[in-house]
Image 1 (tube, rainbow, N blue to C red):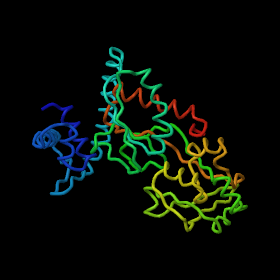
Image 2: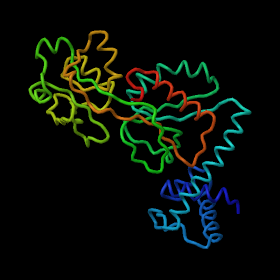
Image 3: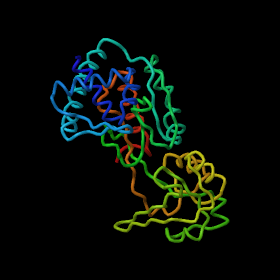
Image 4: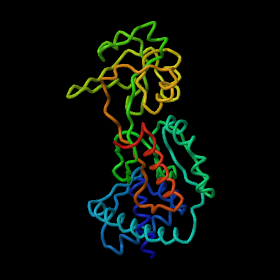
Length: 304
């Protein structure tokens, strides 16, 4: 039995939750993956997995074995990757997922610079607010704002997401300007639906010293995309609380007016996520490093 292949199959089954998904990501027949796991259990003389018709779960012994095997495979992969990188330049396709706003306003405008440096690397960029299944969908990395809930993923912090509360100058002429966050209840607002807001507009949040305010407002309009949120604000449909990177150009051009500037909102961390058991090939490594540099150079997205 190929012990490394068996270890890799075991890790994939644990992370995917089923033999079928693991077999798909490994591009192996289901029977081969099953045989590798059975051989591993026979050699170790311990049961690593509980199998049912719908799901595979890890035994206590399997969980301990998984943690150590993941580290071992990562180190082995890093050794091989580093060796290969010294002999070959990056090439091939990198599959990336991120939010639509970050895709259209940050990453895509900067891609000519990436291609100039790495002409043999191709990018497949998915723009979606849904939380992608990295292993199940064969995604190399995800760029995501907010808390990291995937315990089995490696998360590299590359930036911070701050927010600006604003509206058009024409809107301010018609409706005036709120002087406190609570006064927003008397103004038309536009809400943003996120993966965590359960179909409702995400609350407007404010911080000032030790004071924290969270407002669930009766929005005139709800959208689920940052690009649409910017368009709604520029159309004068209401006050919006935008990611600062999305509001910056409109504020500088005079299309949007910031308000409640003495109040802030806690920043969200931005991470690149990738699977720990997959060594970073040269093409993925250079993209992640490039993205980290891109965010660090962006005045509204750099880490603070």
